[in-house]
Image (tube, rainbow, N blue to C red; front, side, top):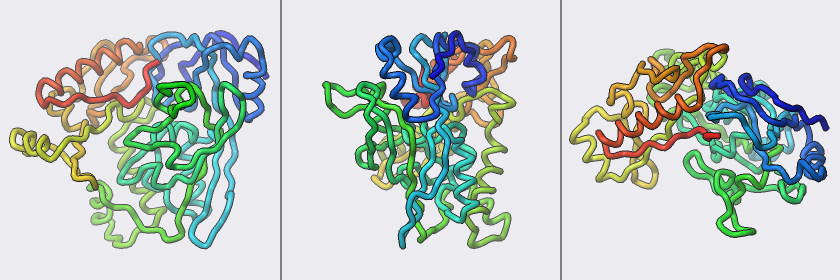
Amino acid sequence: MLVEKNVSLQGSNTFGIAARAQALVRVRSVQDIQDVLADPLLARQPKFVLGGGSNIVLTGDVQPLVLKMEIKGLRLLQETDKAWIVEAGAGESWHGTVAWTLAQGWPGLENLALIPGTVGAAPVQNIGAYGVELQDRFHSLRAVDLETGEPFELNASQCAFGYRDSVFKHRAPVPGGMGLAGRAVITHVRFWLSKDWRPELGYLDLEKKRQESGVQQPSAQQIFEWVCEVRRAKLPDPAVVGNAGSFFKNPTVTPEQCQDIIAREPKVVHYVLPDGRFKLAAGWLIDACGWRGKSVGKAGVYDRQALVLVNRGTPEDSVTGGEVMTLARAIQTSVYERFGIRLEPEPVVV
């Protein structure tokens, strides 16, 4: 086990924010985590788990010990008459994993193509796009208890998935209670990919692609390609323009709240949810407040999609986490003053 000191994290967060880790360990196996916890000095230190860095805003150097997740491996764990159960290491690229499952002939993850980050972060955030959330394809996961070093497994109900939410984003209110933030690190994730596959085409962008192509019954590979085309047209490539993807969650409101907003803003983009509530498009709300293309310092709002905040600096003179959060708070204030809705950021602020 090698402990690296004073490590630059600029290339390890998709915003490209310049920050450093006081100490970092590259985790390539469960044993690496257990070795950290067996070390008298390292075991006592606070720990910060880092995957692809696609959902974080670094506001300064990271003082806790960084566990950089690099566990690899893709395999078919089990095949039943109903599904393929696939396991991926936490350090695998999420998009690479989606592409690999399709190449094996196992559909189901195609709507989640091109989401940046690693597999291990996917359950934490319960990632979702174009009508599919991780919980819809989730089987179970393996993790390590950061207090005892013991491995354990969780099924879907134990993960307490919600909209961009899970048990890994909450701290236990009492010792021994549910809430695994800071208490566990995910090492492997398993997916349930049904053999009774049906295309998910409920989003307008995909329906437009279907109509344009004339393909009435698209394959999973076709949907994968459509999703990639749509995302590339709307969202900046983090390798070219630093960003953390969608910066705010789409807010949910009651039918009464939705009708009130529609009465004032008839063009507001909204979707009905199974429970009768409505989801509003946060990007539309931000755009309506005039933020598209605007900047605060070197933090800007992407000119093609107002939901995305970007780094308008350079590698040598990067945006700071403080600038990003100043811009985010200004946007939140504007949206609240106009619509009475409080936008909640998606990324973790460190």
